[in-house]
Image (cartoon, rainbow, N blue to C red; front, side, top):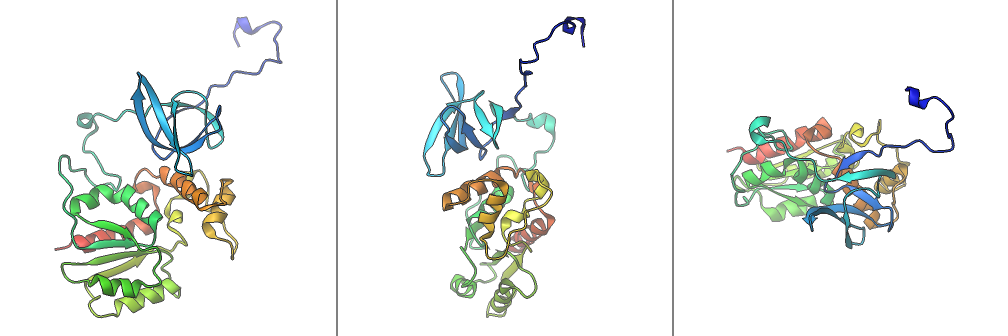
Length: 283
């Protein structure tokens, strides 16, 4: 306390609070306090000498707002800043991709090869793309969502795998005795699969759980009662909207926005994806 603080004080005046300054990032879900508009950040640009952020709501509609005060992030008021400046490449040493490999500057993406990575759904594909996308483009490997593996045997037969047309499949909840493990065993015993198809998986109910809890500021993922849709239950436990497909999609974008690099994911997923990439790129 300084000498200016001595004497009568007006204790009815609320203490000033400094709002946290948060650099805007793509995928961040924000609320504009004045209008009540809630949406995910899709782009940031300069217009008329000021930074403007575009927020897309769950119906796909977009509105633009000036950066600064008047935003809520996870219900808390913040001051929204322009994107954090990138470090100078020369002073930062070798640049890394999100997967941790050395970034190859100036190399164009290869034409897509016949080999493919199949994942169960759109969210799996988006997560793999975010972390390994740079590497896969250099290798010419495309990631495709299956939207479920109940007919994996038929899909593999139609794909017609071979030595120059390999297939890597990443499966959710691939644990002993599960439906997924029985499907995988059946596929691998089919003609042409040996040596040309690799099916791997992680132990989680959904790929959401492959994000390390600490990245989201929680100790562990909530336990969801049997009979309740898992994703709906997760969003409800977080206190986020969860009633519609749009709510599920927006919730996933919020989770995906927290992932920056491979270090934000569980090793049980990292190892399997790297295994698939090695399998598809081996001579």
